[in-house]
Image 1 (cartoon, one colour):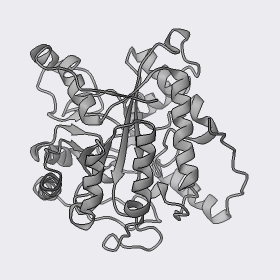
Image 2 (cartoon, helix red, strand yellow):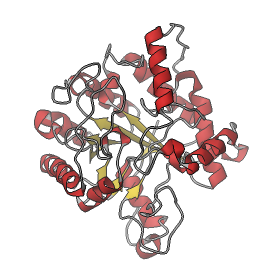
Image 3 (spheres, one colour):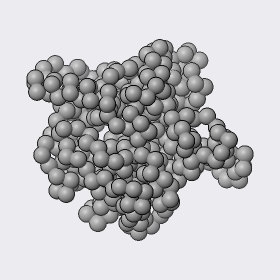
Length: 376
């Protein structure tokens, strides 16, 4: 078991002021389906999370299977601090990815790598190696475009390119999909929007481009549940079955830290928060128990997080420290119950065949569930 120690280094004043500005911006930050932080549903979810019990019900301990969906946004290095989206490095691909793949092999984890289309030409060997190791290759747009309109994630990063209109979005997404499919030789079914930022036109473009699964929203919009759902096109924050047909895509939200806070959602509030990992996982499992859903954890990482000494403006630890946090998370998961590792594509297919309220009655029994890995 990896021992996690709390950092004692004081943050410089500039970093603290930057954090305050991010927190204030969180109240007005634009979200695909409206301003999330001025959306009454978001506030209801925040209050609900505040009262979610912090202890897992006794009957759940050791008995409930936790679905672990490991995902990586396989992309070029971010252009922090005055960089350019047209001039990004490959340290994450060249140094971080091999380390990450070996780590996943050691723990027998199969995941999904949402890959920038440009990597099919810039680093084809890396993408092929991901597929060769048994991981699913998904799509992460062509060159990290924003499909939710003009959007600046943070003052430390330049605004990305933002295709306007459904046709422009679909052209970019389809080109990335075609490049990846030609390289790996299998259909690409899963999509994740860069920055977890996508609007309704972008969602339609993803569906029209031939994708089956989207994982571009965070689960704080859905009571901190990462259960799959066909969202209601007219009310995407609702998971109830409607009279009309559902959206074609299966949405599987990314898991985020469920502890209530008023802060920017960048950088992503991941669930592996060092010494607090156990309580964070207990909140996620408790929220699932209260909703009567099987606990599902959708992790999100980037290859550059596993590069030793990689600099970032948020003071996050990378390289060995990041790998240790990941192993600490797995250890905490094992303490909560049995873990199964499954790709996002296999998980969505299983749900569609057996649990989807729209389609399970049509396809149940016609095909076998996917093979799942077991984390040792």
